[in-house]
Amino acid sequence: SQQGEEDPQALSIQEGENATMNCSYKTSINNLQWYRQNSGRGLVHLILIRSNEREKHSGRLRVTLDTSKKSSSLLITASRAADTASYFCVLTGANSKLTFGKGITLSVRP
Amino acid sequence: DTAVSQTPKYLVTQMGNDKSIKCEQNLGHDTMYWYKQDSKKFLKIMFSYNNKELIINETVPNRFSPKSPDKAHLNLHINSLELGDSAVYFCASSQVQNYGYTFGSGTRLTVV
Image (tube, rainbow over all chains, first blue to last red; front, side, top):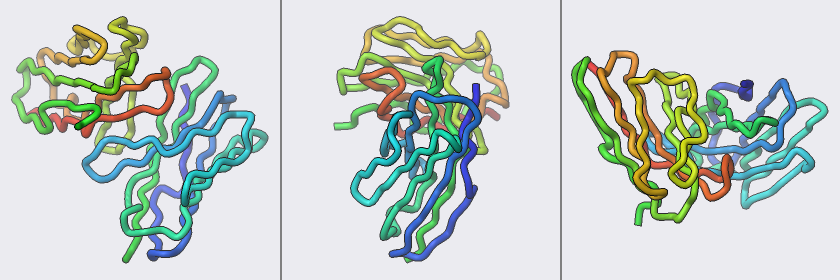
C-alpha cells in the first residue's frame, strides 16, 4: 500500500509566521487526513478532506487537495509555539486501508 | 476523563519475556486499532477490531496476539519479546472505520 510523501521533512519558523506542509501520493485515494503528534503523545486528528473536495478550513488550518497533481497541503496561519509538533499526512486508499506518512517536524520559535 | 487510555506508559523488559499492553476507550467507538511507531516515527497498522471482531491483521509475527474482551477494550499480548520489538505502541479508536481516530498516549516498549 502507498504512503504519502511529506515535504519538507523538517520546518523551523518564527512565531506568527505561516507554515506550509505538503504531501504527495501516487495512486488514487478516497480521502486524506492530517494528524498532529506532540512529542511523547498520541496523534490528534486535525482535518479530513475528501477526494471530491478542493479546500477545507478549520480555525487556523487550511487544507487543499489537488487530485490531478496528487498532492495536498496543510497551511497553519499565525503559528504559535504550541504548534510545535510532528504532522502526518494519512491516506485512505480504495481498499479503505489507512497509511501514515513519516511525518513533518515543525518547530515554531517563540 | 481520558478517552483512550493504555497501560503501561513505559515498559522495559528482557528478551524472551512475555508482556501485555492494555487499552480501554470510553468513547463508545466500535473500532479499535493497534499501531506500532518505530524510531523513525513511521506508523504501521498492526490490528483492527470492529465490535470485538478482528478485521485487519497486517503482517505481524504470531508472537503478537490481540484480545478484545468487549468493544471498549483491545489488549495486546506479546510472547518471546525480541530486540526489534522495541518501539512505541499506540492504541486508537474510531466511530467510523478509518476516520477521525482518537489515539492513546502510547506505550514505549524497550527490549534489552
